[in-house]
Length: 61
Image (cartoon, rainbow, N blue to C red; front, side, top):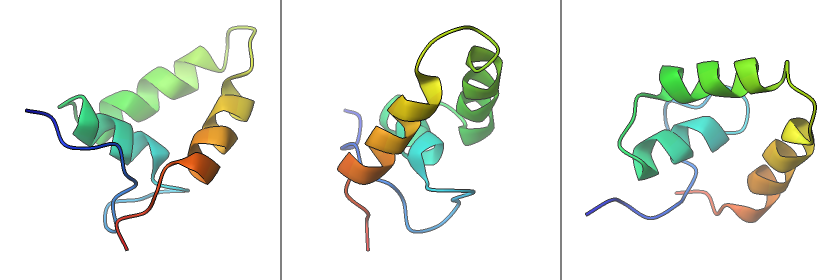
């Protein structure tokens, strides 16, 4: 069973969104970060989605 969607207290870089998503979907944080950076090269609201997740995802603390 996957853990809940929260931003972890440790292992964060900017807001912990990628680390939280990685934990939730059982991936490494660096893989999720790489996917996010590559997706930023495509048109779309990736930055806005990241900011929204940063505001909406609860922190472990």
